[in-house]
Image 1: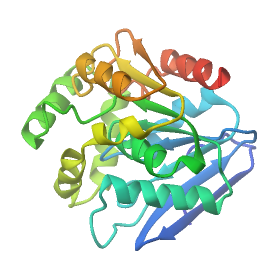
Image 2 (image 1 turned 180 degrees about the vertical axis):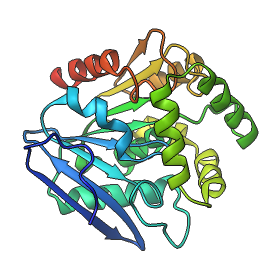
Image 3 (image 1 turned 45 degrees about the horizontal axis):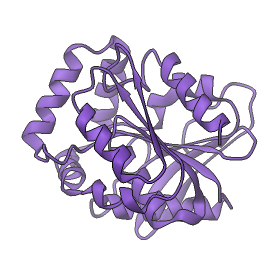
Length: 253
């Protein structure tokens, strides 16, 4: 049975696994209200990195460990971003969710974009935080270099949680990175038909300003917000400024 990681003490929470198409995700569903915020993590991460963010969101929250990350078992084959999206959409339908605010960080932003583009019946809004992969830098070497640059200035909380989850990510991390890098999210963005927030940390080398502006141009209904003095881990450590932007966006829907 999955562990309770996100839900505040005393709250009612549903924990479980969901199987679809030969892959399994782990979920934690708690809180109440319309427009549940669905949290999709980055590569090498898991839902546990959102502990601080969840305390500031309120309402209904659904945290997900994608296959092969966090507590979710390793799939037989590494999933593409599209297959991740199909799995997440099938899970949301199984829980009769038709108005999700899908929040994806890093690799999770690519999955989130595909959910919105491929399965508009389950999504009411989209939040792309630290969106990857910049179309002009689509190699493992360049992306790994960006990651090292970002980690130099990150807070200890980000380093600790990231290291822990990367170790849990298992021996197939390189294959998972390749699946992330070969994906072309710019093909999904024009098909997103819901309000979208593009969120970037000011010092984030993995989500360059030019790339974020390109996304805003491609998505029909998108806005951009930047968090000063933050890097790629803006949703993991010192999350107050990002949480405020997210609450404002969701509250205005």
